[in-house]
Structures are given as structure tokens and as C-alpha cells.
Length: 567
Image 1 (tube, rainbow, N blue to C red):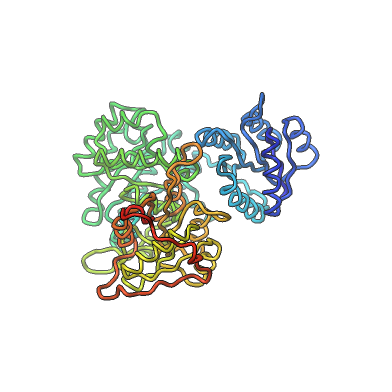
Image 2 (cartoon, helix red, strand yellow):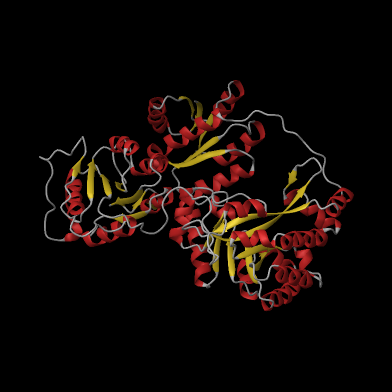
């Protein structure tokens, strides 16, 4: 891939040049903004590496210039000033329309930049080239005609238990089916309905479709459905009559939950307070939707009888972009649980997101990982009731483990990867004494090759190793062995700009983390939680040593009797 790098530090340029060449990338380096701009005028690169601190100039100005002149070129942002600044700069770039492939702190450049460049190569190879077809905007008359013609369709997106994917609820989403068969999303016609006075008719029709689907909904075993009500509906006296009709129509099938955005709650506070109280007296649940993106979340929670908190999908999608974003997400989940609210995370699209949300304590999850919006018929075929007790079966299983032990016994294989032979031998001695099979590796690349052929039940992984570190191993393991559990360990809790190493391991997909030194009883408890305990009478399992065992002449027993010094 052809890159242009703008950084005013000549020393870094020399190091970075050798580093990029090793990975097969051609790079053109510039220490001044003027030469950088001149280079782009003559030869456009496939990627720009941009440092934020450029002496008297700065990378933010360059971002705005790129947005005006070359918005099609993706960028990777570099900085030695910490993750918070990188995160802010990323948001600035995204707001201008520039694609940001990643942000890299210079203290972690060697470990993080290769994976970002690999994503850039993959993205460039599959970049689509197609003509965009446009469609004339709907008019009020066309929308009204479509409503009367029965074109409003109710779609439902599954809301599940993140631990096992079991269906718990579904969010109702309005769709409009055009005569051509094309399905329009709510964003393409709801604003017109609100501005033209047709929102009540759409809501009424949508509720009728749900009532007509009651038998189909019963087949799914769904516990509740969540419905968004426009603020304009909440102002009308007949809103409660409309809602009562839906509640009665779905009686004995499922309960109803109303999702209300914090912006709606703040726009008409007096009306909303009255309606919210009456909604709860009706036996309907109330959820605050898109939590965190408005300016009055706390006031809305204080004044209205919410029993659920739905975290906006933007926080879920950004959880791995920076430690700050991750800490903020965890704080919101903790906040909701402190207030004894059910916490729902929306926008879940990856296994790594699911695992972290389970660990953080969300009650429900929603997103493409569990299912896109679908008709009631498709929902029923995906989540069909499996027994007379009404227990709904799981939908499509998310790949990877759930958050609890699966009870695997003494046949479990544990692989330990650590560049310290002394730690390897001490760990293997403990693990085999507890009845597990154990494989040890000092070289992470060899361990990954073995995992491709026969994945272990659990990988105990040191974080900082030469050549290939634990961060990269976690990423690769989630591709080649998604069912293996990963326990990341490190003796270095903080690195660089106070970046929490173990938290980043967890964010990348580690199932558990421990900081060295680790007491044996704590290690054993973690193993049993992740893969179950060994069976009785089978503790004599021999250790299986890798094809490249540590040099036994260098292995020494831990000094002293303190069990905390074993790892």
C-alpha cells in the first residue's frame, strides 16, 4: 500500500520507514505541511499517516484541509499526547466526512499499527464502485395514499439475553412498502409524517398490524415488545386510548414497553410527566431511549418513572476506539444498575462487544449480531417456542463462548504462552497437578499455528512478548479459534499514557484478565470459572510440552514460599 506520512520528528520517520518497509508498504515522508500538500497535489496516496503535533502547525488544521481537498483519502492519526486527544481528533475527522482507519499512540505504534494497515489493505481491495440510484422524495399525498393502502409494515428487531442469545423482547420499527416492493426505513418517511400531521395515522396502523400478528408473536415466546412513540403523539389526549388498545390486543401474549427519547421528555416536560405516570398505571413499562446523547438525561431519569435504560448505539460502536470511550460505557451501565434499571445495549455487532457487555453487566442486547429488523413471521421462524411451558429457544447462536462455565472436565486442554521459561514451567506444574492437560510455548507464532490445527479450551496469554504481543494474539485467536477462552495476564498494569493494559486486553476479546503476581488459588478459581473444574481421580495427567519447549537448563523454580510469586 502507498502511504504518505506527515510528522515533524525526523527520528520517528527513520524508525517508521524501516518498520513500514518490513510489512511491504511504500511510504513518502514529510516534516512540513507545505511539502505534504505539494506531494498530494502531484500523487495521491492510498492512506495518510498524520501526526497531530506539528510544531507551530497542527494536525487538526490538516484534517480540515484534507476534508476540503481530498476527502476520499482515509487517514490514520498518530500522537504522543495520549488517547483522549486522539479520540477527540478522530471525532473531528469523522465529522468532516474523512474515513479514519484508526488512531495510534506513538508509545504503542509497533504493536497497533500493523493491524490497522492490514485493515486498510482489506478495505481498499473491497471498496465498491457502483452508481448510486436516487429516488424522488415522498410527498404528503403519496404518503397518505400509501397509509390508506396498507403499506405500513411492522418490523421487529430481537432483544436478547447477551449470555445465551435467548429471545426476551423485540423493538417495533415502522417500515413503508412502496408499490415497487422497495421497503423504506422509518428515517425516510417518519419526519414527513410528523411535519404533515400523519404520525397518528401511522402509529394507529402500526399497532393494528401488531395486534393482527398476535398469534405469530405468541409462537416466538417473546416476553415484551418495545414501541417508540413520537413526542407529537404523546401530546394528544387519544394517545392513551391508542396505547390501551395495543395493550389489550396483546394481552396474554406479551407486555408492552414504551421507549421515550430524552429529547422528547425534555421538549414537553409537563405533558410527558402526566402521560408517563398514566402509562405506568396502565401496566406498561417505560424505557429511556438513546441514553447519553441528549442534554437532560439525569433530569429525565429524576422526574419520570422509567424502569429501563437503553444505551445509545454510538457508545457501543465506539467502545474499542479508545480507553475513554470504554470507561464511559462501563460507567453508564453501572449507573443504570445502581438505579435498579434494566440496562439494554443497542447496536451490538461483534462477538468482542457481546463479551464485554456481558462482563459489564447489561441485562439485554440488541443489534445485528443477534438479528436485523424482520417481519413477525421471520422472527417466529428464527425464535420458535420449543415446549409447552413457553420457553423460547435461542435464535442464531453467536459464535464464541457465553459468560459462564460450560462444565468441561478433565479433558480440557490449557495452552500457556509466555516468553519467560521460568513462568511457563511453574504454571504447567500447577495446571497439571489440578488435572488439566497443558501445552507451553515461548513463541506466540508457533502457538497460533498449533491453535489452527487443534484449538485449546483455554489460552493463558502473557501480554508483552517480543515479535508478537498479546494484543495481536487475541485478535488472531478470535478469528482462528473463536470458541477458545482467553485469560490475559500481565505484570504491567499501566503503560504509556496511563493506558490500562488488561482493560485493553478485555476490550479486544479476552474472557478474563489477571495481574501478575497471581496466587495459585486465584488462578485455579479463574480456570474453573472459564472451563470448569477437573474430574475426580484424574489429576495425574502429564504435561504436553510444545515442539519448541523452553530450555530446561534455564528454568528455575520460583524462589521463596510465597504462593503469590508463582506467576
